[in-house]
Image 1 (cartoon, helix red, strand yellow):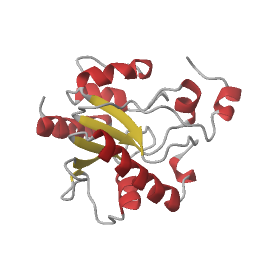
Image 2: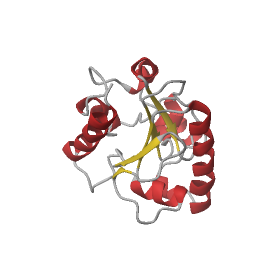
Image 3: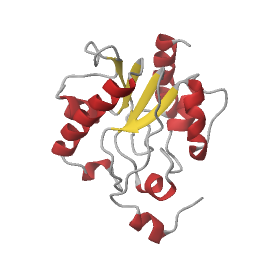
Length: 180
């Protein structure tokens, strides 16, 4: 479904449901939902977002899923949440305080659901939300309780620092580390 301009405008500041449950191998954590996601109710819904291709090319899914198939992730031991719940047109509309508050809420979700691994998709979001200004992409030294933490590149089409191949390679590194 391609949202209309009116639907996109109405999606500002909405929230969408997490794809989350017990016994997750990996809980993927976006920065915040975009307007397409707010309008459709599906994570990483905007055409050009590289999450779904990277998830498949990284070895997490047997085929490339579409955003409206996000519910299939739970059966694969995967989930999706966000650092900040509210939708915006761009992540730069979020304040540092929203990231910090979102980081605390994310810790609470991790404590509740206890995924084996949390993968935060965006180095800047991770650094701000968790007060780790020197963090780099990859496995983080400090976990959250028994949950290992990884930082992966932001899959947004706006992220010019990583090519689709580069993003898929980082997803593959995580997949190789977490196994089945």
